[in-house]
Image (cartoon, rainbow over all chains, first blue to last red; front, side, top):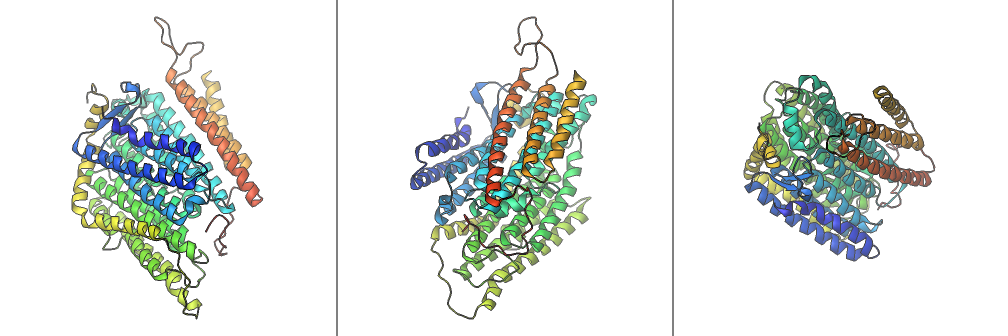
Length: 504
Length: 119
């Protein structure tokens, strides 16, 4: 048994209380320990990524209880990829927060940050549905704290909405799990996969209810229409670096959908069949359209990026809803891309908000410090987000388009191409309002002094560089992702790893 | 007994949903608490209802499902903690803004000055 599998959960879980208990009065000590911890987490995640890509799925039996009686953690290519993405993003976001001083604007930023990482890594690793619920709650509790970090009336109010929405979501999650448990008598994912496949016809209705409730829960997390209402207010009022970290939170919903509906309820299940694909696809298309219209109509920069994030979830779920290996490869590529692009855009907008006198897109404001540099960064990040060449958003959308040839091709292609255009127009309007019209409001040639935050700019450059690397190395990356989706659709490898005695 | 438990879960869920859709934070919190009670009973019932049976397997004797009891314990702890948290946050928002409406007033048209706590 490879004990490194538990490390991404244990490390932040130990570090966070240590930070709260020992160094709560010393911010610089917190910074050192927390950043070191995240860096170590990133290193571990790379090791796990390497292990997962050379080995079949590996299982970690907690307390050495055999599955399905104990809780298991499963490391396969998908979970290793998600952990690596989370850890790398978290490291960059943390450096940004330190550089811009966001972490000093409230208490316990670093402790909450580590708890957030613990929840995220746990959710990606666990092989037990109830344990997934528990890790969802861990990451949500931490995210509530991070969301209202820094305080302020608006932020608190948006925070209450966010918590209330997610508490209802958690209740729904429990209803779904209890319905599924009452039918199958198990909540271990691999065991569920075996039991659902041989379900008697009489139990199919209850099973479908449970499975669709579960889909609703993941749709809340993944901001899928009509359950996306929490996202714009939450993301636009959250502190910039926290919003950037939240870019990976919606992907938890996507991950859970991919995991559950390829492993437990694959399209060839007798009791559910293509039910989920039929539900997901229209919702995903509407999500994409709502996101694009939101980008066009947004009144503040942060809100615009939040809607762009919703739109990117739409594209991602369109690919996922195909439930074919090729579309899954495209979806996973787009998932990694959109996480980095959303994070980059949130950080750029945070830098602009910091310098510009207001956040509105309706009123012009005079030029601000580092005007040109920020305009260039905004340009780069929006190109990636909207899916224009030369960055990886273009390749991601191209892969999704290529993978969705078939019956619904006309609708999907129209939706993706039209929304890309609307998004581009929305972004250009915002860019010209913020960066170009600024010059019209003032006659003086003197520019305000910019703040020297070299590390923050370096982080944004690093995210954009990551997107550039994804573009240049698109070939090898898609090959690796193709193997990942092949592993996802080869359910027996996962099931045999968890339950060595299971038979197809 | 099935009828009693089922209607209790149904009624509590209905009340919870109604209260959650109210405009002020207090009914919403009570509604969420109600929903979590309903789901706790529901989880308990998903292991089949039995009266007077131990949750431990002993030789020759019948037993009730112990796993749902463990699940419901976890769910109770989490929902209790969450309720405490949202009460604190709602209180903070109330003290900060002076009203306890759950909705955000549409501030889209008025460019707002940077708030305290923000940069």
